[in-house]
Length: 619
Image (cartoon, rainbow, N blue to C red; front, side, top):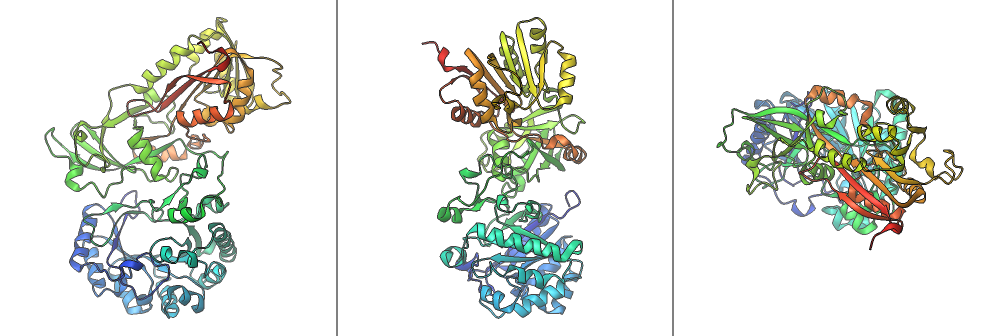
């Protein structure tokens, strides 16, 4: 048990089924069954990996004669038991009673219509009475009970009938899932696949109807595999394998468990910059290939976090010597997620941490951890670190990983770095700020991270300083520290207001600064265009900011961080490349890039750009 909640492993026992769903994922392999001894081994392996529940799926697991044997085996290993099922065998009370004796705790039941006509059409069997009978048998038994409705062209306009049929079962969660273009969903794509925007509209109506009818007493209504931008007001009702606490899964014939992933879905280019991208499933790849991304409606101008937590789970090794084999290799690398699992080596000890965050997609987590190397140990007691050089210790890949043939597939082993990357990278910024002279405008100046350099130059008259920030409290604190600074309580975008609320008239600047505030700007393109118009000959623009990063924390630290208001303070998590793209789109002729510092495994999470007006280029 991790964090007091179930940690599930999904085991496919075979693909035979007593229904014949047109959209069946495993249509092409329905003749394949897993060997009973193979399933036994997988149940034992799940226990070894620290899972607290095994969930059997298929095909249809309840038609296997070994069902009770597997339930007894899992219970004997201290595991809870779950089923992904069409429920037909669970219409028999004696079967349910016996499974409950062997720690049946979770059922994910397929029900695709509120009437026999619709459900039987979907599953191409006379199955409704048994499946609905299973819901009656399972409700009120203390189970974590879920009803899943796959939405196709055949039932998309009949979802409210399912809501009405399930209202009496208040302990159930009813979910509507977009049909996946896989197996039957791929072969019969044109016959089954409705437009995702139409599905979203019908599911929204069904959920809103259900909530209004059920009230606070339940059942609960949720949705899956629908872009969140198409579900306004119902983003919190999103549901998938990760919300159900599945960690790993294994198909018939696979040698070991693999992390649950979303590789069957993608975020198309239209989703760039969307504030919902982290938790959003995006579109099925097969759907996007046919229909494209014209139906998505990316949401921008809404805050999202710039960090996430790796929470301590367990000590993997204690007393490891230099020549000992890697414990990750010894335990097998495939069950561990490259982005979400983190192993940290500190002397002879190796600890395992886990990121359950849904603020970032799986692809984003892999990029942050593996490609950019931006993972840190939080050594502070703060809810939100504000002095990175003091509060954070960078993690780097352990020398044990060098030359390992499994290095790319493995979650990897990390150790604390001895390099103070934040102090080193900030020194580069400070050296350039110390050279500034003349008129300076600073957008988003409130936190004043470089006042130790700018303050003496303001006081000594080397620069005339105008700072803009919408946070009046931060400006009041800055005014006390730099009384000679001119400060205005306004967003950066106020520069672009033709009414000139700042009263700048024709005022121009020698230098413009956006220091760790780029990702706080709601509309950076608008601010850039206004800045370009006010930069004098030879004027420079300096942009400094941070990419998102992961923090290895104790559970108590993570709880403090999740309660912090600083959790949602950015509109984006741009890197240098994204900022360059925005500058090129906003000021294509005016600015020339003269210096660039990117983020990578050897750096802090801070990037920097310096531009000069194009009309001052030296041949």
